[in-house]
Image 1: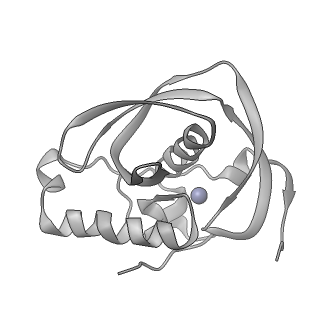
Image 2: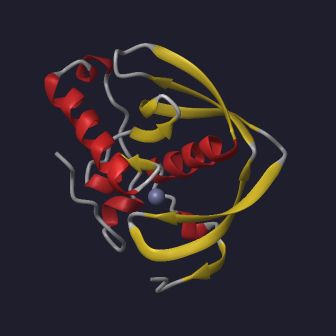
Length: 154
Ligand code: ZN
């Protein structure tokens, strides 16, 4: 099942999302949420954060070479000093694009859908997507950081 995506100015998008308890991860309901969010992301984007489907919890899905990757309670533990600028958009801010400067390389710590703690090193587009999605969990949107914002792009 794909899920409806909320858009600005919905206040959920500006809330700090809640941490997910380890005991909740293995529930059928949570596993289904991961599958539904993965399907929703694959349809339209390369990343999705739970607040975008109206759930204020710390879960993101990112497009990975091995398929949609669920990152629970993700934390960025390292951001490279070296940054690069690229154009971003967001499913919650339709028809809008802007240039955002992000770290080129990051390290992230997260819990996977089996409840295991994982350390991930990412660069380029994957690093960018993780930074964009983790921002969502803190109520931060790309338009807060973007330059040359273009609206009403069809
Ligand atoms: Zn977004």
